Length: 307
Image (cartoon, rainbow, N blue to C red; front, side):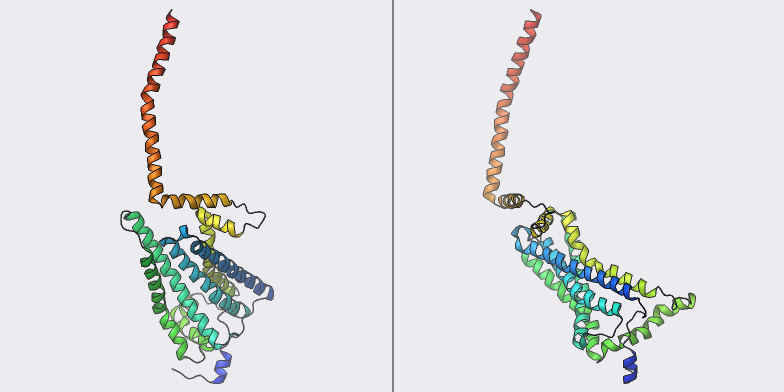
């Protein structure tokens, strides 16, 4: 590994994006990143509370959603907040060497866990649709899968995490490494064709907008759950029930809980089945009598008309 002197390290503290963003633009991007962090942390925390605080919501699929929410919260707190500020403010890393290693490690692990959780949810839905008669995942199997997701995420992210332990000034020379490797792979080819790319003033804006849309994925899931699922919607309403514009019905929640509890109780199922069977028997017994009485009335009416 080539040695770097102090002057090169001091000159390598520039951010990845070119400097020169106007101050109003920096405020706009900082506001957008802050909004993403706020919505992602609050929304995913509510999702975690809805599933863990309500017994009827503790299903294998919902446990996967909780794991996805945990990964999104970690990504929002460590990746979007710290790296977003670092790229927008265009200053040397101000949070210290320890936070540099911690932020990059948690960012890699949380993104890997996010992707692997999506894979687990897809496989769970696939087997539920294609093989509906197969035994569903148990609580123990679900916990084992979730543990496997985080272990595999650590293994996948270990090369990137380990690289921060070998280089003393990893955060400072990160830009040097990227400027050495990136042009050899893609940048050199693009510049050879489009020579005006390095001088284009819109490059930092494209970079930040792309990063914003990529990281904003952490805040979308709670909105999707609220729009697509009645129980999650009612859970969000219960959290924001003090707002005057939110209508929340505690009776609906209690009725839903009672209905779910009754259908999970074998005795209640037998009572429902017996009552339905009794109604069918009564209706089948009364049907011939009702039919004969109607025929008699029609015959008498027809006979009087003929007279």
